[in-house]
Image (cartoon, rainbow over all chains, first blue to last red; front, side):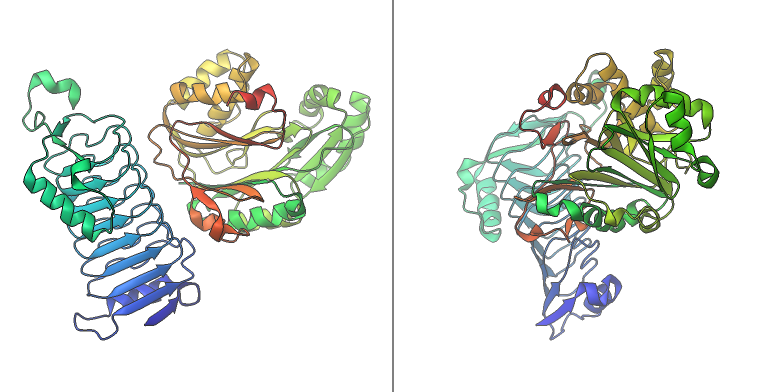
Length: 227
Length: 309
């Protein structure tokens, strides 16, 4: 286990060290102490290493992640896992705005609540939120799965494309062109796998699926007010 | 951008350290706002009853005999205490309005930063650590305070463009965001006789609240109606004599984090601002909801200002 004191070493030295790890590195376990809400912790990683951050993080923790597993023992600021490509990020506490925004792949788990714009423009990432999510989540979501064990705020899935949105609790309102969908056996399978990998104690059958009504895919003058 | 910090103390034993804690929080928010900084501090009430905080770019000359001259003109004892470019003028509460009139005549270049019984506002252009140091903010005590670090977007970097803005007696406003309908609203408020001195968008927000309250709204009601009448992005923190309030626009893209323990309620634009507070590891930490007005008050019997929230 390599332990790095972020306050003593500085952010650039930390990220350079993590970036220097090759695919076959022997140093697979890293611990970051004194995170103190700093920005851009462990961004741009590209190696199968496991990084544990002690404490809460600021903007963009784990952004652009590939392969790495990042555990945040605290809450995460805005943009956690933004544009991540693969790997896993697990936040023990809450996540601020736009968690997992534009993510292409990998798994982002928020054990607390996520606030507004969770999964905005997601492009293949899987996001599992144990608590609630805020307004405008999955706005323009293109693909991937957003799983919410609690409730969703206003305008869920506004203008979404082919992402699957699963919510166990209440949805305050659906956004433009987002509708409730049928839960088919393949969705139960997807959900079962995601819940298991995210350590979530919930039954797939308790969820409702939402997705695109596909009315905004092609321009129709009658839909002008919905754009 | 801009950074906001706020600290409301529940534990009286922390009151002597209010300035020190706020300064630390403020300096942490330097990279959100390195242009200018300001602080509103709610300290002990003035012995005389009320006080006006004033600022001058030519303090040596303007403040030399300001207390005596003002006292003579309004027929009351005025105590003047200079603090760098600012001075606190203490006087009986019923003399405040008259004193402001006289000040504009005898010291036309002196700007009023705040008026009230316990509020003092200090703000200047410069790095937050330098602004805090020049006013010795770390030595100030009080029950609650609000700080702001500014990165200007809508108007010039000047003392008068810095936050906090005084909205009414013992009330102030700080803002992170930008208002897009401030020009039309400024014209409307000026037609209604409200004094607006700069091209700054937040000053219009502050003037809007003042105008609403002059027309009978409580602060809570004024904040509620700001959600309809102000166009743009905002996280507002408002200070009152007994506490502070928070409101974010419905889109809520400007960040806000709050923390509460048995000892305090704290606000920060980012969690970084809160990390040195005592017991933060076990504090309840959350994000205030959009389009929701929050208030914390020292008063067990809230005034009608706070009750509305």
